[in-house]
Length: 149
Image (cartoon, rainbow, N blue to C red):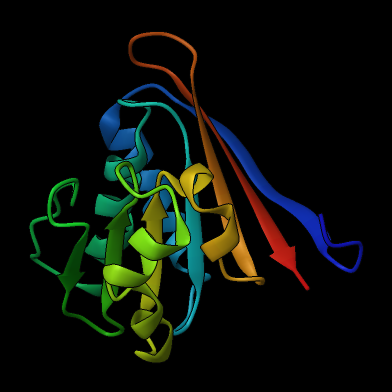
């Protein structure tokens, strides 16, 4: 890890339903601005897409959010736009480059990346890391950390 990075835990919550996860994301989104990058970490079914659904609802009213597992990226038009990536199947730099991923860094929207653990080499230096931990069938621990270079 880069020794110059500053890490600050922003929030840690336990949600007990998908709606609570979405509501937490909406509250978190109030602090976001164009150009922010959110790296999402967690196992399958841990709440990553529900979190993005809450985020997108703040900026892209009326949009239907779904996991971009097969499309790799879903673009949600709003103010600002939200770019939702799923890196489940991407594990190397060539695969990442072929998706056009790096072009989105120039688009001035908010980038949210599921399965960020698969592309540590491709994450923005300054970002929010959001970790999801399944505590039970319905409960999730969500920890948000801000990474500043």
